[in-house]
Each structure stands twice: as structure tokens, then as C-alpha cells.
Length: 227
Image (tube, rainbow, N blue to C red; front, top):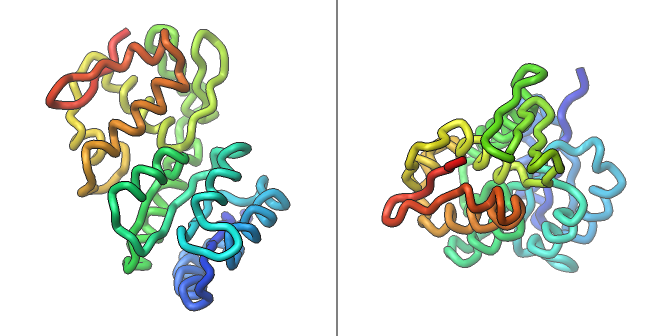
């Protein structure tokens, strides 16, 4: 079986080597890029081969934000963003662009690999064929990792797909933001509630008025999906 390919994008050669070494030890194949422009070029050459991108924010020629924006126009490949600035507005900007995970430097390479494994495990169509969830006009094919609204396909990022799946699996139940973060992000996340709000806003928009309105705000708590 071929190894999964991960692209590591960072202008610091030492950082690329550190991350790459840990990924290779975990049996991944690594493709390196030294800036956003190079990353975009490589991605469009090999987009059918790359399973995940680890993308630094501050880089010459084209920064991580622009690279992410460019890639997101054509692909929902999972993206982990790395940054030396742990500011809330940067994190929210990343999520608005479709980033799936956001890790501040310095970080533990072992934790980074664990995040990579969690994302790939959950995006790898683990469910059996025909694993379908339905709620009103929304249909989720977990094995194909595809969402339909009134039988029309809807393109969601990996994290948006996971969020909608969690809502449908818990339809009719009021879910706190903390519970959503712990379950959808697959680890104890100590971020702001606005992280969830940003994702829900984008999810509602992509689902359209009819399906988007099914995601109800539970004031002072979180959200609930109602058919």
C-alpha cells in the first residue's frame, strides 16, 4: 500500500526537517515547499496525491493565508496552519479561509503528528459503504465524504463536514460549544466560542437558507439541529 503524502510548507528549512522527520517516522511520505507560491505550484501538479497540507503563515513570495485561499478555491484537502502568532483574529481568519486545524509555534512534533493522524483517520472514509445519515433535506454519505441538500451536492471543507455530521448524529439535542469543540476537533481545545460560531456561519451559508435554518442557535449555550 502506498504511503500517504503530506506537504510541509515552511520557509525555515530547520522547521521543515523537524516536521518531516517525525512524519516519515510515522510512515508518511513528505513533499516540502519553501514558500506559498512553491506550495501552490506543487499542489496543482500533485493534488490527486496529496492527502494533507501543513502550512506556515509567515513566508516570503506568498504567505500561508494566500496559499490557503488559492488552494481552497479548488480543493477541500485538509490543511493544518502553523503560526508563531497566537492571536484570536489570526485563528478566526484561518477558519474563515477553510483551515481545519490551527497550531501555534512552538509546538510538540508528536502532538502535530497526532493531529495529522486524527484528521486523516476521520477524513479517510472509515464508514462502510452505504453509511448514510439523513435529516430533513440533508443527506450525508459518510463513506463518500459527501453532503447533499435536496439531492444537490454541497462542497464542504473537512471540518465543516465533521461539524454537520456531528449535528445530524445528535439532531434534536442542544449541544454546548465546549462539547462541540471536544468532539468535532477531537481534542481538548482551549479556544474561544467564536471558533464554533465562525464555522456554523460558514456552514449555514453553504447549506443554503432551507437547510441552514435547521441549525438553531441555543442562546447562552450553543447549537441544535432540528428538522
